[in-house]
Image (cartoon, rainbow, N blue to C red):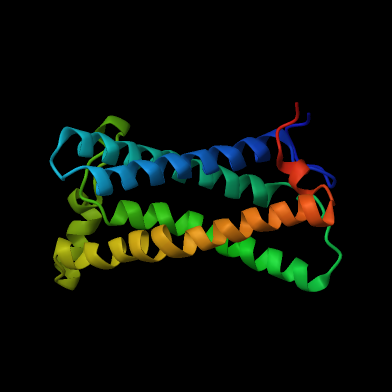
Length: 191
């Protein structure tokens, strides 16, 4: 299998990035869900779950940067659907999914006060940039963090991102089982 995309199918790099980001999303979501639903802040289990969430978020951000670069620098397989409305819907949903994949880790970083020193990442509240923002705009950490957390958790994490993922998976299943056009097979790892 070629590592680059062709006009007919996705290459191994695009497939690996797609499935790695999907796996990271599942790990990030389940770890933070566990931390919120089954632990109390300050417990060792909570700290471990939150650190897994943060670590996976940082890894996901890196993978997304690579994925965006890979998508912009290479060719993309031709869309197999011939209906113009479905093509437009696919373009819009993919653009929205990419936008959420970019905004989600950014708001996660900008809205947490937890460190990831083991990865060389300082929390945003301790950076010179936040100190400048805080001084220039006379804003406290709490006032800064609240909208970031709202976007990260309440808008994207619990609603919009899940709706887009359901649309994405639903469309892939429609391609495979209803239209039988091979779209889903092009993103699956080859046996």
